[in-house]
Image 1 (tube, rainbow, N blue to C red):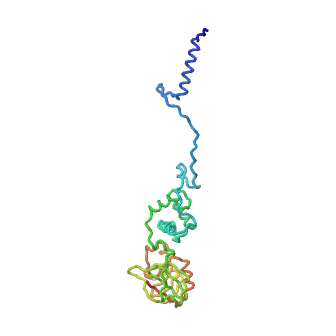
Image 2 (image 1 turned 135 degrees about the vertical axis):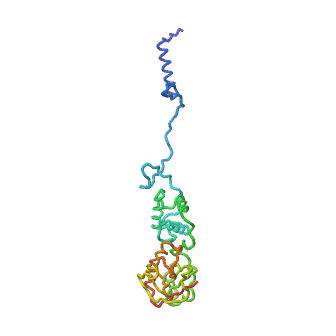
Length: 280
């Protein structure tokens, strides 16, 4: 069989088509210099990676990259225990929490954590995750025993024998607690703070000789609410400084109470002439 020879025009068309196909498959691009550069074919596959979780409203700032997913949660609302006390004590150090430590992760603790997180650019969840905890650790010191039990919870000493009869404010220097007792029964307990080295709180048995609800010290011009005087100028009273700074400070000899609710209840119940025992 004889085949028909291809004409020159058809031959050139086939060559041109082949060249075009070669350019299409190679991904060739033409640079400004007129020279050709070849790059391998790239096949785009659908992106099946999970999309990042969105942050809570208000966390992202315009033009910023959304934060990474939150780390493991350590403590959250409803949790209790010594670790929660430490969290609260450290939040007090950076002025995000003013109550406690109580050892219970309550609404105030949640609000404090959320505020701390927002200030540092962390997701404002109100839950303490690993990232939040590590940031807080870097900004605070290790709380001491009395920092952990500022608002109660530390075990009080057994009442002194002199406290077991009658109406008594029984004050222990060793456990830093005050018991309001009636006929041997403890009615209320509160943590307390004492005088400094050169202005110590006197020890012994005394009695309440004057109560002053809105007292102001004439010596130091400082408020002494719910003051119950028992020895000279020394009194049991509420101290806003104790509530704010804890055991980092000291009184001028008075017995400071940080729990205003507790001291207000004691003030309402204690009478002139009731006994005060200050002991170790």
